[in-house]
Length: 464
Image 1 (spheres, one colour):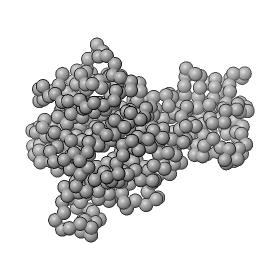
Image 2: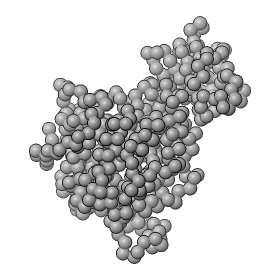
Image 3: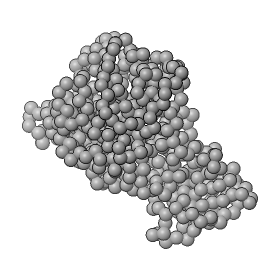
């Protein structure tokens, strides 16, 4: 059932390619608009199997492209000196943030090229910022008049174009980020001044837009953010999620996160995000996601970024391996430019990750956590497993100069255990250590003969 605030809200469906796989028939299970009921929903299996996704922060904040995607807030609300000085030095005295809208041109945005890059990255899903805290929607929302990508700036439906390209050209799942609140929307500010006893903003803006997004674009990830300090009752999050899980066109495949109101993060919802860049380094009892960004200082594109501000591919591979070994998914963010270009540094990192996954994806995709997440003898060794195949993967990030890799966790079974290096294929020699673990003799390879450059994976068959 839809929440009572929005009786009979019906929105048209765009002619998009079918989802992969198509939404299953409506099940008998129903969810009530309570956290107890909603939290009992089993997360669709595809999400845990995917392991790796791409986050895309793109919006009007990509025009100033200075400091952070929180530019408007830091300039107008907090009046941080470097943001104030930037505006004085580069724009006329009466220039308003809204004036950046027409400059958000997306001139070179080509959804097919983006889709091809994302496919090459090895990612299994994407999440596009359909609306950030600035309120600008990347689709022609009926509820964001004159502050959306059809009325202003690109004059294009960015969400639709990318949804079609992803579904036509890739095997990725299409997802959308949506900010519940908007920094300076007058209705939100009025509700805030009443300590959220009034609910003008969610009734007239947030909830209609959420229904519009889901009905029109059918995202299989709905990544909520920005509660503005308001509780989930203010947003009617449980009412919306009950509709999403029971009635929506993606009810069988959609996954959601945990940002549905103050106090819900890391407690309620589908998968947990807990904090930005969350990487606990140990196993968690609930499915989680490490949302992080290649630019260490910002989620949106920054013209003032230095090369040292970007994570190296070695650092990104380490993030992926640590995250998956501890049961999480990695959501790795890029920030396109105002004209819709994915800058070369982001494209390089995406393609590098793809080349690593082409060799080592067997140790990442559709894996499970093992009894140990990392090794106790050799640092920077992380484990994943495929129990049905009796496989344990030992992913090591440093090639030992001795050519011998000591693993303290796996216990070999004489006559049954086999060890292979992914991308090499030939069985490797190994010996059991006296107390615990095994020592693997790595092949003697020249640098060009290495199966990859930034981390390697051993497939251990029949170990305990």
